[in-house]
Length: 287
Image 1 (cartoon, helix red, strand yellow):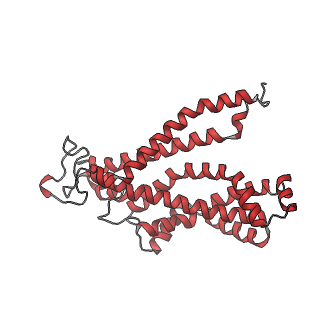
Image 2 (cartoon, rainbow, N blue to C red; image 1 turned 180 degrees about the vertical axis):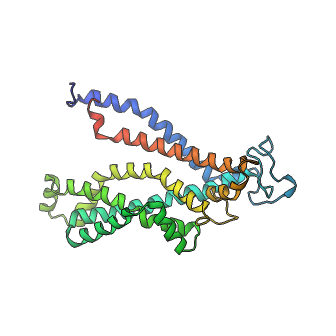
Image 3 (tube, rainbow, N blue to C red; image 1 turned 90 degrees about the vertical axis):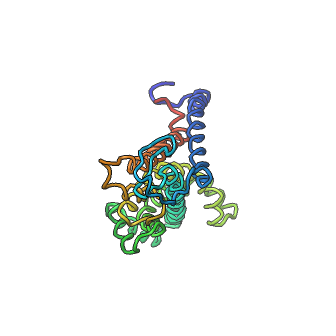
């Protein structure tokens, strides 16, 4: 059918099948990236913290693929090992805010009342401030550090998940199958775990996938301002900060971690877009 009317099941399946190769491709890229991060210590050709002033500021070469920094440390090794701090911290942050925000949103949407009013007003306060500015203030109060940077961003980033989960719960809780579950003797906790959560995880998952790149940029921004990971820890944001004064003279010192951030954010964003397109209910309609 045309004009926005539902298409046949066969056409919907064909539309989904056409997206599957792209989904597998970006899943493969993400898996390679995560495996390289997990085994970074073994893949790094040099000790990322070993200083050798005799080879300071060496340009990229066959021996040092990304060159060396002011202390003669191999930048390729530091970028590889820095991925463990940057990527794992980002994934931990997204996991914390998605789980906490979903729990708050589902509770507010299902039970309502005073809990809903208080939680939504708190989320309004968090959303009223520019996110990174609020995170800067919180991170400064906590005296920096990668753990404190994660806490600072978590404090201001959970409301988006709470609102997504709350809206989806409100749409589900009056459905006939929810009423049937309650009439069958199901407790609110059982209804939430068995029926509501499985039906709202799609939008939450897509939001989390698309949020990984943003959170990585914000964590790197805090580290760039010395409110995140501290030297000599290898982390992409503080590596860029340490070399920012040498950008015009020794550009590889800044461009190497910057390229790592760009590639990682691009991979996760493309995967998030692909997952969204794959599970989007609108795939069953002609565009």
